[in-house]
Length: 78
Image 1 (cartoon, rainbow, N blue to C red):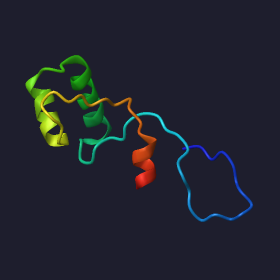
Image 2 (image 1 turned 180 degrees about the vertical axis):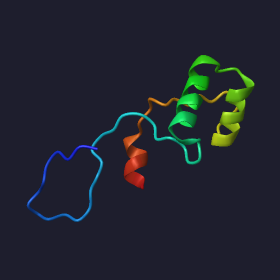
Image 3 (image 1 turned 135 degrees about the horizontal axis):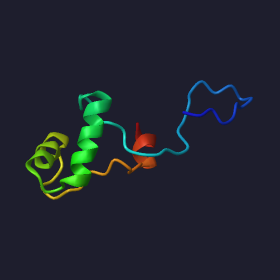
């Protein structure tokens, strides 16, 4: 996170302007689990391990999960 500017209007909340990459899913196993999950999706997209992750993430059978995706609209809805 980078602080880019401080405004004089004394806002009390922060807001997101941009981002890079997908947030690790809750309970994915920490940094090592997240790296393992990304590796499995990238190197073995048709494996049983990938199918288990898809099921766990609530994805459709052939839906792709991409760790590099960033959706600013989803962030702003929160």
